[in-house]
Length: 247
Image (cartoon, rainbow, N blue to C red):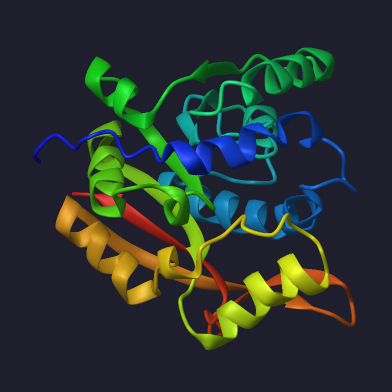
């Protein structure tokens, strides 16, 4: 696989760096991620357990697995992965996020290796992982194919990529941009660019072209009555995630 150029979009990094101190405030600017996190974790843990034959009811079911959380932010996913026993590296191009994540991990009694770097930096070192998480990040990178190519290089043979993003269609514009940013004010206006959203078929294609075999995709659906997110086998119209395995 040809080496990808750096996929970081400086403008996108600046948006999240400006919000770094609010990562662990469940009612702050990252409230949508706190609300979505149980649903994301349900998908992530199920896919990892399935791929590596782990029993989620056992203590530290991911013990012995190495995991990279790309775009780790304040550590909302890195911390539960570490609690499940994985050896976790959290990487983020926004340097302001790293001390926030490090301090919270210290307060939580967790050992997580947080690094201010791009995924390409780790790939250049030859580091490889059993699982790579790329959650809500591909819609913010400059080169989606190059980014997925890098993830392929970061995976061991048989390793698992889990990637979540936003579909690109009129409904996703109404829900994720008009609704979440302008009506509900869940996110600062301009957090997302609809043109950068990726359809499930496009993401499957990006994975295949990089040398990954897609094995699953699910929607993540918000219910305004229960005020909760849940996984869906059929509704991938707005938020969704895929899992793909390195050949």
